[in-house]
Length: 203
Image (cartoon, rainbow, N blue to C red; front, side):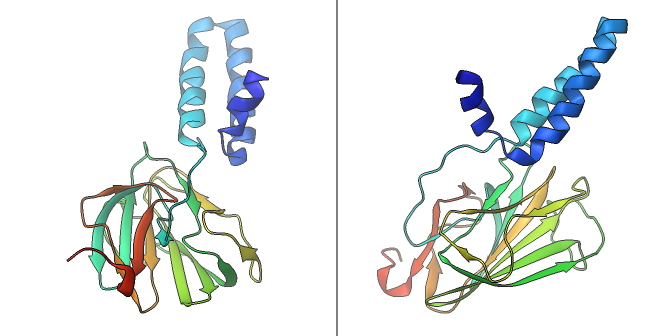
């Protein structure tokens, strides 16, 4: 039962990778034990990277990603996700996916804000306007996973995708909202990052 609970805390996208690594570890251990150590270590890191912890979803508009905010301008916020952050992306609001736009592009370090990069844009229509979540691949990120389809209704905090090994996520808001976080703040997917202007209690 405990093993099943552990598996529930790992994003299922990792299962095939983990199965391959474990199989290689076993085979190499049969021939030369030391040779299996790198594969065992990488298996542990993979399980850690693909972790999918339970989250309590906040009020207002919530963060689509874990990481550090390194850019805010008007209604746009960008989050840098290091390889040690949880990389499961979540919907900032309840709504309907009205568009998915994938663009090929260059792979740059995720900590840099670059144009013409590889990205996937998820456009969500909510009661109060259009929200955009943009998944940007970093130099080590070879895959952008999208878990939703166009026309699908989604809940706030629902898993919508994942970027493998280092990345950046952008959140764009409709008019009428203000961010309650600032540049340099660490955030977690599902945590409140913006509220309506009339509900804003800060200066």
